[in-house]
Every structure is written in structure tokens, then in C-alpha cells.
Length: 55
Image 1 (tube, one colour):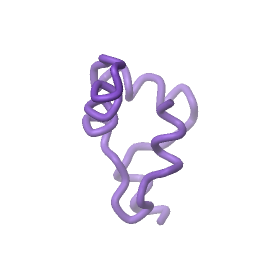
Image 2: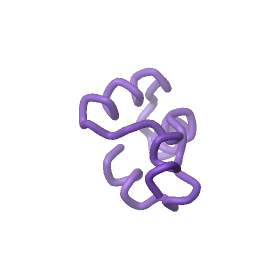
Image 3: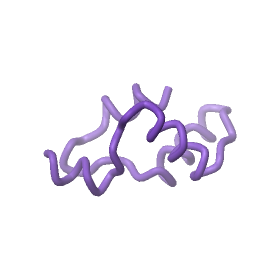
């Protein structure tokens, strides 16, 4: 789910871990920001700041 949200984001304005956590919570998946960061890093996806630089 996190991967799909990141793939669908605007590359010039990527979603932060906090925004990803809010989006997941809105879909019925309560998760903390640090949990999102943990799984994002485990999938090899860089932070939102680094994704802006790559855009």
C-alpha cells in the first residue's frame, strides 16, 4: 500500500511519512509515522526530501 501511494504521488511534491500515515489512517489502516518510515526504508524507497531531489 505504501509503495502504491508513493508511485501515485506528484514527483515534484512527494508525500511525507506523516502524510502517508494520515492517508493510510483515512483508509482504515491506523499506522504511526515511524512505522511508515520503517517499511519505506525496508522497501528501499528514499525519503520525501530525497525524492524531490531526484524529480
